[in-house]
Image (cartoon, rainbow, N blue to C red; front, side):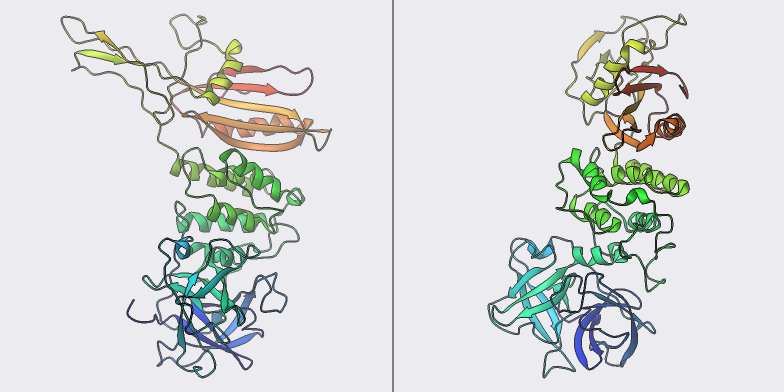
Length: 502
């Protein structure tokens, strides 16, 4: 870049001078220890014609207790009027730690440079964070302008793109190093920032909708990171205090997070998440790009739907999960029906993936045969077509075509679309059952619902979730509902047919 962007800001608050940066129409970020009062004055040196703009402090990090080295040292300011400047853009989360090491630049206002400010050239020393909160910065050349007093709250931007990687929060004059709160940590403390911080595979609108649902789910006793000071730039929570929160959420966050990431090989954070948003943001920022069969947020939202106290909210969470899967899962595979112009017909029988095969084998003794000319003809279970993504190389054989005329093509058999209901005793409560409903599609398992219920509520809940499961399976397939009970003296059974409800 050849010039400093105009979104750099100087913050004057109760006689203290610090830095900040514009991130939306009227929203400025700085450190909580810079803006300790309720009001502040904001100046943009890159737009000297504006003059000072009044602002109010609308949010501080909930863990900040007054020190300049406390975690959560973040403040959000709302300007009384928009400055009409283009806001800062955020860099990819791993950009500061790329190889070769990128040059970082911060714009601050130390003693002697209160009016025009000065720049400091920096680099990140390591990818690891201090106390899971700060990244350590050092001088680009080992000397030059240090980020001492007046740099707190300054944006740390990549020199080549001008995109923001984090915010300067403190300086150590002994080691001549600084600390930065990376963007991924800033968004942990203030949820609307997630709309701006890049998370590959998750569009801003999808994240915004998820953020609204999470805010409505709430979490008793947790901080409120959802409020938005600028309704023109961010979509705040319609229910920021989580009035629909369920007591079932208390102590369940760690379990929810581990269940969502466990089968995917993603390491969960140590300890219990501090809030429901923190658990969601961990998956958005740490689990990587969503891929078919690896959608941890779809797993988490389905499980969360069973814990919230509002049935409408539960339905909306399941709808979000279903739409998220539809965005990232592969499209249905159309069965091969042959070609009238081919000399011969290439036929193959792909092997079923293990998960589908396992469910089918347990249900096979009870499953009726595929459609045949006689109403109740018995025949061996026929494997459904598998997705080309998961299937091994098929065994191919050439079938000679008739010598004269067009080759006849037999219609492809209808695939099975399994729905699995699992019931087992709850280890946490002897009077309850742990019930889960899953749908299998293209060789992959899709959790539809999982909940701990008293026995009298199981039947109604299962029927509702089976209805939801029909939206997850292939509509052209033949439905198979399999029941697996893991309680003493129980057996497995299955049924099939359109909308079978037993």
